[in-house]
View 1 (cartoon, rainbow, N blue to C red):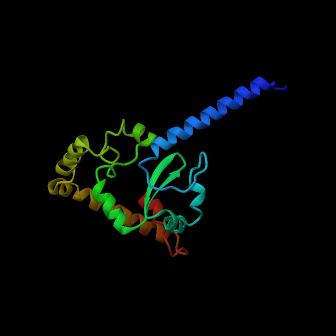
View 2: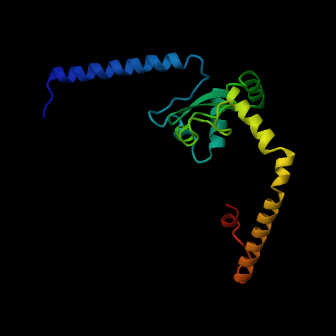
View 3: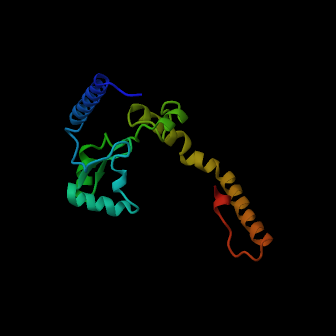
Amino acid sequence: MALDARTLLLILFLLLTWLLMKKRISNKQSKNLPPSPPKLPFIGNLHQLGSLPHQSLWQLSKTYGPVMHLQLGKMPTIVISSAEAAKEVLKTYDLDSCSRPPLQGARRLTYNYQDVAFSPYGEYWREIRKICVVELFSVKRVRSYESIREEEITNLINSISRHSISSPNSSSVDLTEKLF
């Protein structure tokens, strides 16, 4: 099925318009961002990390400076490569960097971030943390579970002992199945 010249020109025009709009939007968004290496569509800068990401990031920091912007897939990421820059960023942008990134899975599992671990920093997080410290982790509450902890420790030791007796040829016990 052959395309006529008008259809081809229309497709070309729409494609160029879309590319120009995308570039314009990305330029507006990146005005306040640190320098960034060139990125690929969809994967961003993932191809530049290699098998040893810490060394790749060090090499990139020599080119783009101690603070740089990377696009890791869909996630924009700011990489800090020096102690001085990290101190300055954590001092200046401490409230911006103290929450976890909003992830779809965490949002669904925690009923829209209504827990201590994934809740964004703010009034709700401070309130729920205070409740945890006062109600769950007080000295009195921790002592009340001492017998349960001792019972679990005894069960673990007995389980390890039974496993080592049942397989005398084996000198090691895989603790991952016992602990987790």
